[in-house]
Image (cartoon, rainbow, N blue to C red):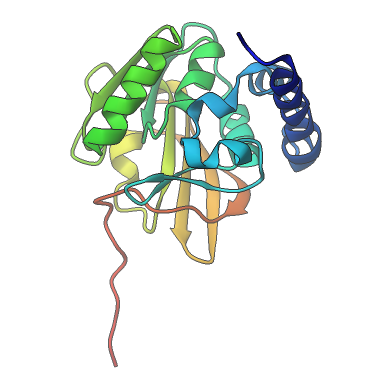
Length: 226
């Protein structure tokens, strides 16, 4: 039997996450706030960090990867503006939290995860939670196009130090499609939304500054030694 006290505490934590972390960071899309406010984030957090499920931190999930903090997830979801029926590509499944948010917003999601253990765990978790319209694939999203495109939404959950790989993702955007990415190196990186306005026109919107781990196998910036 579920513990009502525990359930109440988690509900209160979700409320505080929205009101104290996500909304104050200018995430004002009601659909995004509703999904994040209802989804039990603790179901996606490693057991050792379950008590920190709603904290304003990156949560380690193994293999050098992490769950993005809630306020950054909110910006990601708001920026890609999912419409019901959109085809979405997620690069970096992690535990499947962002994947599930995209699905609950109405997207049909292909999510690729390079790490076999994380991919298998996410697939099992999403199946157990009966998350619909999601296909988790073990693959390197940087190795080439992911079959199923072009995509209305592309969400890249790890950072890219340079723009060398950006064209690969931009080329998979449908006209009208929105791409969320994080460019740069520590200590400050830039979140961008890239919108394909036509076959030849892409618009960039700078969002917020942050710092998150890079995608595995991403092109590193050249270094010069004196």
